[in-house]
Image (tube, rainbow, N blue to C red; front, side):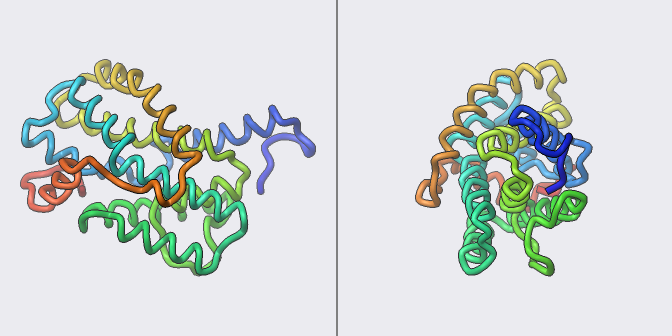
Length: 234
């Protein structure tokens, strides 16, 4: 693991190193291409279901606590745990297969796999998220595995991932509703306790906690496949 700071750095220095890595990996400048994906939100906005900041807040909150955002955090937790244990065998392969199968539509599967592939390539300066020659894996697994191997603790990793998920959807709304940037920031501010709650709950989760009650989001992902015109890939 590449060190940030002198050898034998204190716990505080290690915490700063982990924070800097998370800021880099979740930055809009990190080339994963998340800006091209709306996670079905484009279809929802086109149908008039999300027209303002209040509706956007409720939509993202539901995803983080009861939908695909929550499942992503559960998968991240399991990937972090397996990578911390050095697991690259059948257990990891089963996790990859489950995460792929959990994508409820072709576009959702494309989203998680394209982002995972891009993240693995962009993260090469730190370490290979998986064993050399491994097949592409879903984004959340690649993120969790790299974080574990780079010494980033699970809880801040979950919070950073959840925040990036929310911020990207807020950015989609800015472009499509259209939602003012200040209103989008207010939504993100309101989501802070939601992000924290989801991260803390996910940190103690297992694969038994997977599940979604965000049915409208799943339907929106399917409807987006035939939406015309559209700006986003999903």
